[in-house]
Length: 138
Image (cartoon, rainbow, N blue to C red; front, side):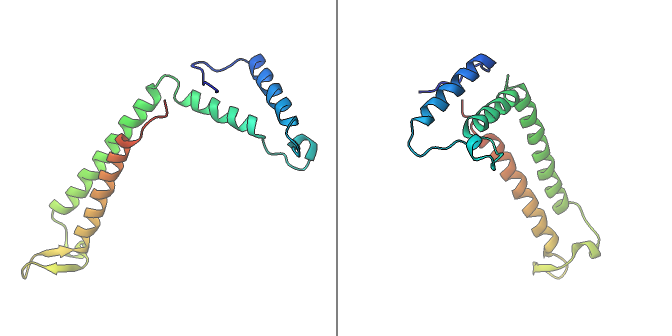
C-alpha cells in the first residue's frame, strides 16, 4: 500500500520508485511504454501522478492558502446574497422593473426583476453552502 508523505520525496527516491515501477510493468505481457512508441509525447502514468502530487502539495502545503481562499469565497458569496436582497428591497424605476409576472394589486406585483433577484440570492446561498460542504481528502 502506498502512503503519501508529509514532505515531497527527493529525486533519488523518485528515480528508485520509477525504476521499480518500470521493472514491474515490463513483467506485464503486452505492455509497451510510450518511449518505445515514439509518436506519443504525452506523460506516462508515473509522471502524471507525480505532477498532480507536487501541484497539490504546493497548493495545500500548510493550509493557509486554502483558508484565505475560503474566506474570500465566503465574503464574495455574502456580497452576492446582499446584492440580491438589495435588488428586491430598494425601489427601482418602471423601465428597470421590466415585466410583472403576478399582480398583487393595481400598483404592486412579482416582477421579472424579483425573479432574477431570487435566482441571484439562491446562487449565492448555494455557493456559500458548497464552500463549507467540500471535504478535503486528508
